[in-house]
Length: 294
Image (cartoon, rainbow, N blue to C red):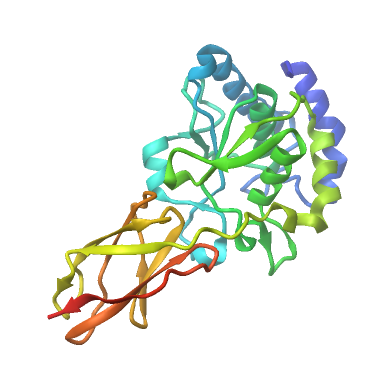
């Protein structure tokens, strides 16, 4: 584990690789490798490691994934939604006492800061909850032909002894836990791993999800004007993101393993088929005449 002196030395030793790859600026376009920039990264690292040391097994873990902004999340990829931030909290370089499950959210964010956060989790052996699914859109930025930050985080986890399993909170999807030997990689090692695996990112994709199954809708009827709040029950629903009422698709919310909620769109009077869609494109069998517009 780093102290402040070895942390700064490790950051400086990797500086040239970050600069060569255009990763040397913070969110405002300022140099992330000034003393002040490195200090921000150190404070994030120290905040995680000190909290882990204080709370030991009661430290819940860290939340990985990009924070959702006002841009279109379908294009943005890897977004942590408002629900997760409100219910699990955030942390930055000023955070010094938290139980974990903090989303990294700093006005001084840089790739160095993000990497310091991940290395703190790796060095401390904490769990990483994946608020973003391991899909192609979330891992790879096809427009710019480069890894998204979430893809970089997944490389860090899998390179340094962590594997994925389902978490106890459906909203957070999978969790990465340390199953290999404890490791203490530095920034240079991490950056080299990312560069080596840049073209092998498909290895990070999650296996196809289980097909959701619909058993009931409550209520099962509502006005043709729409806006009826409906609870859909069944199984394999943790990864459902959309609900189809015939040819109109609306968002799914409040997932559990056995239910989702949604709000009906407008439709003409009469019964309609309902279909669920997972984040990786897997769809349920249509539930025939599952909802009736009146």
